Image (tube, rainbow, N blue to C red; front, side, top):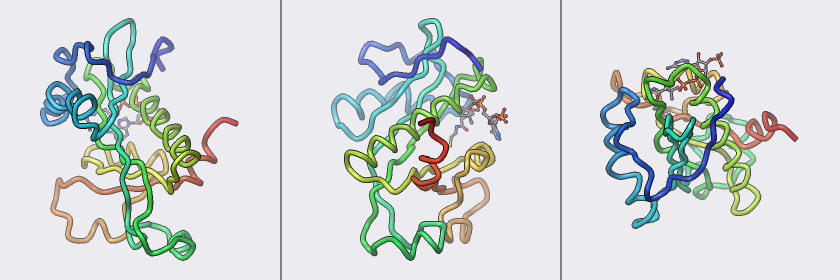
Amino acid sequence: MVKAVEIRPLRRDDDRNAFSCGQADLDRFFAHYAGQNQFKLHLAVTYVAVVFGRIVGFATVAASSLERASIPSARLRRRLPGYPLPVLRLARLGVDTRAQGLGIGKALLRHVLALAIEQRDKLGCVGVVTDAKSGAVRFYEALGFMPLEGAREGLLAGEPLPMFLGIQTIASTMPR
Ligand SMILES: CC(C)(COP(=O)(O)OP(=O)(O)OC[C@H]1O[C@@H](n2cnc3c(N)ncnc32)[C@H](O)[C@@H]1OP(=O)(O)O)[C@@H](O)C(=O)NCCC(=O)NCCS
């Protein structure tokens, strides 16, 4: 794990053009849309991981909601009401190819989970959802994410898999 990593909100003057995580759609989003979505349209907030002044990763989050029927736990579904449930959406996650495998992705995800706890305490939040690219499903599974109820059915090969991590599980992994 890189020791000198700082995770902070994206700034208007951050240089986003040198970044590449190896997925063209994610690189295009980060270079062209992350700024306007945050500073002009207020759709989402992007957090960047910075090492020695260079952006090596980013995670974009937005407030969202989820239908009870999609929660991948029968026990939890029974306890929750039938109207849209507040969740934090991890909309995008990418680590620069030169910095992959060093714990940056996990550190960004931990930061997002801490934001979910903050949302729980201030606004309400039953968990984190994300659409996992096929190559990243195991990365999320290792952190406890589960496919949404019924999400695998009808999914075409290579399509992102919608996944969920409940707030109780998140809280149990947080340092006290
Ligand atoms: C997937 C991604 C975000 C992971 O970030 P990273 O910084 O390379 O991952 P980390 O170094 O934090 O790895 C954390 C753990 O996940 C594992 N891991 C990393 N990438 C993985 C993958 N694609 N599949 C399965 N496990 C993975 C690591 O081995 C490590 O395991 P450990 O904790 O047991 O040592 C990064 O590789 C990336 O940006 N990929 C391209 C874009 C992408 O797929 N984004 C996700 C979109 S949903």
